Image: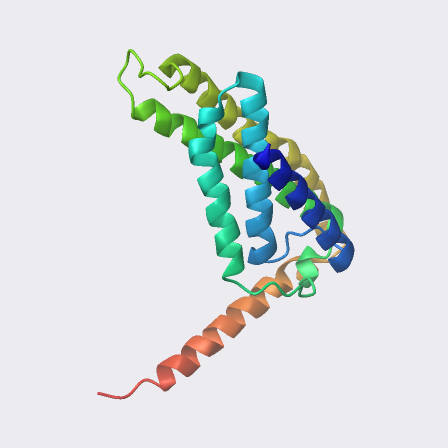
Length: 195
């Protein structure tokens, strides 16, 4: 019940943040960390409902809590998107797919961990190793399968940008970022005391 409430509140947060920023809540690490926690909870709720194994919460919920804790340690300000990310559809689909993948990989991690801590014949209180193996397998299939569905969309978008001669829009932010990093590294090195 508490997990469902947490999932509902995080869903509401994502909707309100999208309305406030004008794009999906995936533009910085603060937003992505909370979305990662949301994806982990969603993955847990799906697998718990399908397999009736609440024991998966033993690993999934701490992963979500750590991501929420991490989000409290970084700035929550909403910054404008860099030019390459200003395609709301591509950004939203790309990151939403990643969130689904990461959430299901968290469940696969939990199932594998529970599988490893018990002997081959099983342990009282834990699901049978065969069931944990199936849950882990299904989670990995979803985690790898869902991003493959979004690959044609990304390719179509980038091909359209390149054909239109907008390659600079795609890559200029990366060049600017690298230039800034090189300049700051040069400044840091020049401030080092000479030996």
